[in-house]
Image 1 (cartoon, rainbow, N blue to C red):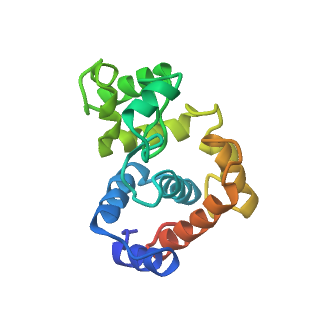
Image 2: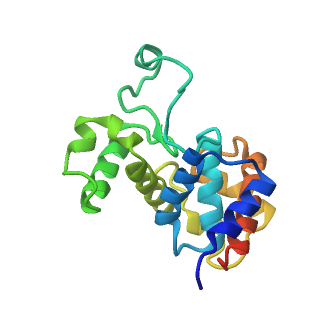
Length: 191
């Protein structure tokens, strides 16, 4: 089955917002890594990125509205603070991401550890989000433990999926986004 991008974007625009070119580019980047995943997994990854990036669909820095000096002074895990579509934090997670990005041919081994800002590169940020959510990098909870392997997810399943990233913080809002993205994906031909 082919993916009908026009139907996907039409539904997203109708349910959530008009979209800027940079938002569309973010969807395209994330779509490449999400492609082939179960419907509910794809919907929740998109919903998480929508929320975590403040709807920009572009990688962001933790506390992006504050300065680098603020991050240096206030974040005990500096320079391994959150970056990306989801907030990759702590040196051990950067080491995992470095290994995965090198294995995918996106960087040479050690490059992300030498330059943590590479986590802001959309291709690396998308890989981190995808692998991290699949493998439980962020909280130990994996997509496969909270969302169905086929078909649609329930309200409660989408709310529980928030534990993959951050407890139940904003779970209801992200569940709403996931339902909208699920609808858009189904309209585009994903089942």
